[in-house]
Structure formats: C-alpha cells, structure tokens
Amino acid sequence: MPLVPMRQILDEAAKGGYGVGAFNVNNMEQIQAIMEAANDTNSPVIIQASRGALKYSKLIYLKKLMEAAVEEYPQIPVCMHLDHGNSVETCMEAIQLGFTSVMIDGSLAEDGKTPNSYEANVAITKKVAEIAHMFGVTVEGELGCLGGIEDGHGAGLSDKEVQDHLTDPKQAEEFVALTGLDALAVAIGTSHGAYKSGRIDPVTGEVLPPTLAMDRIREIHTLMPNCHMVMHGSSSVPKELVDVINQYGGKMPGTFGIPVANIQDGIRHGVRKINVDTDSRLAITGAIRKVFFETPGKFDPRDYLKPAREAAYKVYVDRMNAFGQAGHAGDYKPMTLAAAAKLYK
Ligand code: G3H
Ligand code: 13P
Ligand code: ZN
Image (tube, rainbow, N blue to C red; front, side):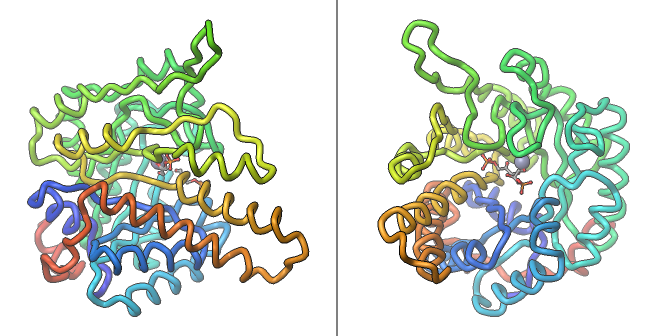
C-alpha cells in the first residue's frame, strides 16, 4: 500500500470508533518495530518525525526508511507525518519530501516555546492548510498549550498556568472553521516527556496524577462531532518500563504518564490520533541498560539494539490494541494524495 493521507486514516477511525497511535521515530529500529507491530496486529499506523528527528537522522534517511516500511508491508495503511512543524517553510519541506500529513503547531511561536496569540495561530494554520491541501496533504493544528518543557518543547508552563492555556471549546469551533484544518490537537493538561505531573502530595511527597480536563474533549465533541481530535503527550509512562531503567543504573524518579483508560475515554469522544514517543524511548533505554549492566563485555550494537527493538515492539502492540486500531488495516483501499487534493477543492 502506498503512503496514505492521514485524513483517510482518521476518517476511517471515526467511522470505526477507534483511535490510531502516532509514534515518533528517529531511527531504523523504531520504524521496524512499529511496522512489525502494525503487521502483527493488522493496524493502520501513523509514523511521525519531529523537527529534531529530521535533524538527527537527516531528512533523506528517514524518508527512505519510511519508504522501505511501506514496501515491506504493502497491506498496511501508513501515514508519514511531520510532528510540531513550526513554520510554513518546515511544513513545505516535509510536503516536498513526500510526507502525507503535517502538523503546524501555531500554538507556539516559531521558537517552539513562546505561546502565540490566537490571531497568529489562525493565520499560520490557515496558510499551511491552504498550501498542504493543494497537494492532498493532511493538516493538524493545535489550540491551547501543553504543559511542561520536556525535551525543549513547550512553553514551560507551571501546573497552574497549564489550566489557563487549556483549549477553549467555543474558540476551537471557530479555529477549525477559520483554518480548515483536518485534525485538532487539544490542550487538556497533558505534557511531553516522562514527568507529566507537577503535583506532589505535600504530606507523603508522592507524585499525584496530572489533572486532566477530559470534559473539554467531551465539550468539543458535542460542538463538533466530526472533528478529529489529537492527544499529544499521551505516553502512559508505565511503571514497569521506568523500573527497568532504574534497576539497571538509571535515575528517573517521580515519573508519571497518562493512564490508557483516560485515552480510551477520549477516543469515545472524538480523539482519533494519539501521540506516543516517550514510552518507546523508555522501553529502548531500559532494554539497552539491561544488556550493558548484565553483560558489560558486549560491544556489538546488534546485541543491544535487537532487544531494544523488541521492547519497543511490545509497547506498540499494546497501544495498537488499546487504542482499537488493531484489526482495521484491511478495511479500506488507499487514497492517493491527488484524490485527496480533489476532495479539498
Ligand atoms: O513533540 C515531542 C516529541 O516527543 C518529539 O521530541 O523533538 O525530542 O524528537 P523530539
Ligand atoms: P509523549 O512525550 O507523551 O510520548 O508525547 C509525544 C508527543 O506528543 C509528540 O508530539
Ligand atoms: Zn506533541
């Protein structure tokens, strides 16, 4: 199957009432693990690359790896998506490279840190949508700001500030109408990375679950039942993965993720794309640490990258089953970008 526009994957997910994991990649092992998981669970899949990933792996290498994935598994619908594009130029570059979907994150200024004005967000998102749709490429936009500043992403908002930057459902309705985007990333209190909660119990010192505004998702879904919502920062940061890291010499105290049950609740109310990066990073790091710790004499990268790939595979299989995309790869015929472009006209 050729690469398909993300819009088709999300439209089909809406029809089937399930969500689709969008997994971040930086290298061959992650791409292979995702594709093996998609093949074994018969899942459509979204593979996404951040600007950091494109810089790390160099554009052309990721493009070719994704093409290899599509060639190896022709029966799996795959979308190649740009995660957190920060400018019209970055999105154009991805489109020219063959990406079938781009995110323009106009919630933040081009530096990827400063919260943008609503007007500036509308303007840049609309512009990217106009250009991308001419090529049949799907567009994701974001309204509201995520919490945290993990990995240099986000505005570094405190827990309290996050509550002031949640997506406003009424404004979301206007934003979607003004911009013509295909998928809306919502801010409901999640953040990137492994430390999704700034809340500590003052008595026990224990990390408390992050406050999630799931009601915003329900409100947006009521206002716009056909709007495909995206949950960023949706790694679950499973304790067992963090435990492996800590057991073999790592130091990651106080982690906290988004429970899968919350994501499933979101899926019941219009969330169609779920962004997961951190869980794969945790699985890979734990597996590599274990090999280094238990067999310090090993120095062939295959000795630790193979278990790393297997650990990531397990995460992807779990998420594909939990989000409901498993079993749906064969539900539809691939749509070409040219056909998608016609639909936008
Ligand atoms: O957007 C956040 C993703 O986890 C990507 O992070 O920029 O470090 O690749 P990255
Ligand atoms: P996590 O850090 O929770 O995996 O989120 C990834 C993400 O939102 C990428 O855009
Ligand atoms: Zn994100």
